[in-house]
Amino acid sequence: MAKSLRSKWKRKMRAEKRKKNAPKELARLKTVLGQGEKGEITMKDVAEIATVVPPEKVKEKSGDAEMHEEDADGEKMNLDIKRNKKTMLDDQGRYPVWMNQKEARKVKAKRLGKKGKRKLKKGLAW
Image 1: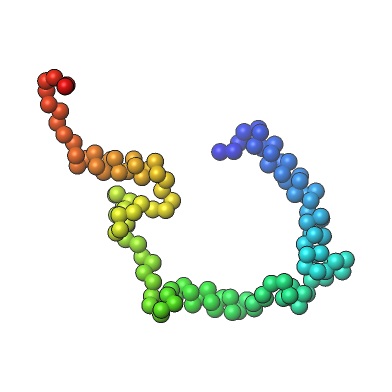
Image 2: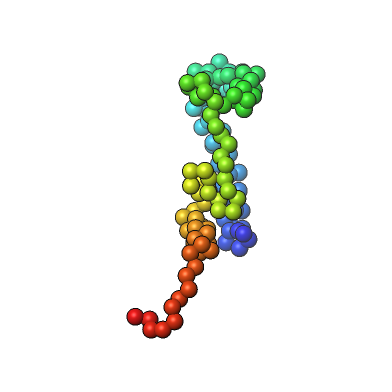
């Protein structure tokens, strides 16, 4: 999608705006970091604004987090959600988070439609 002339023009103009505003944004960022006119950014100055963590520790934490998903109590969390592929329901009868209401109603109608088909009686409608 997004191939219309209007969207192409808007994309082009946004790119132009980014080019024009890039130097101003960089200057504003440096002033926020407390660098002013120097143009040099040191980790010491950044540490005052944000917490600086060495990359080794971040890699260790991400590796540990993948291996051990644990609660505060020390018990492992169950991240495996068992979902029926046909009905899209999990073990507690809920639809996926990404499924919208309309789609869920369609799937439910299809599921219940197969079970509850009734024969109509011949004769008068009232």
